Image 1 (cartoon, one colour):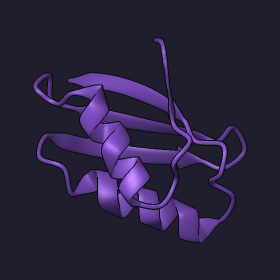
Image 2 (cartoon, one colour; image 1 turned 45 degrees about the horizontal axis):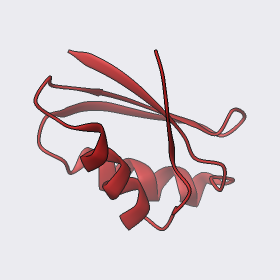
Image 3 (cartoon, one colour; image 1 turned 180 degrees about the vertical axis):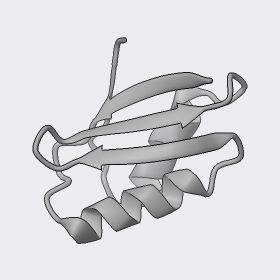
Length: 72
C-alpha cells in the first residue's frame, strides 16, 4: 500500500471534499481518500500500480485544476 499526498489549494468546503473523494475513489486500486480542508491536502492510499498522474487527472476531473504532488 502506498500513501500519496497532493496539495489542492481550491478545496474549501464539504462539496469540494465530496467531489474529490468521489472521483478519486472511483479509480481502481484506491483504498482510502482523505481531504483535509485546513491544510488543503488530499491523501490517497492506493495499490502500487496506480500512477500519481492518474490521481491528479481524477482531481482535475472533479474541477480542481491546480494540483501539486507533495513528496513523502
